[in-house]
Length: 93
Image 1 (cartoon, rainbow, N blue to C red):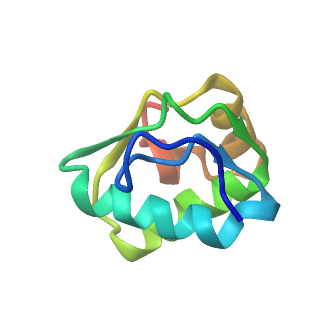
Image 2 (image 1 turned 135 degrees about the vertical axis):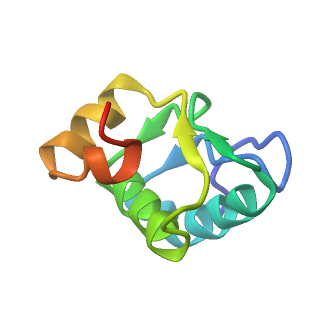
Image 3 (image 1 turned 180 degrees about the vertical axis):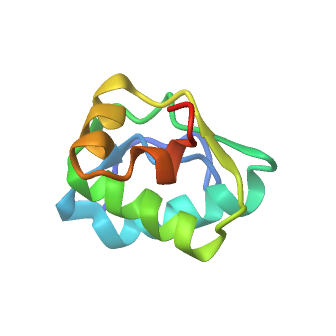
């Protein structure tokens, strides 16, 4: 299953929903591995709570790994709803 257009194999997915969870996680891992100190989430345009789970998985695999920037406001709200906004986006989230 394709998760939609990508800029490259190392771009963060633009779409993360339950239907694309496994492929989105694999693509997010590739993006995280090549991202440097920050992962830009501004291209994430279509998501559900699966996106929060993907970000938690990335954070668990690299607790001091890349920071997330360009967080869509609704993703920030969703993370807050689940009580993980600070875990994912830092204490100033």
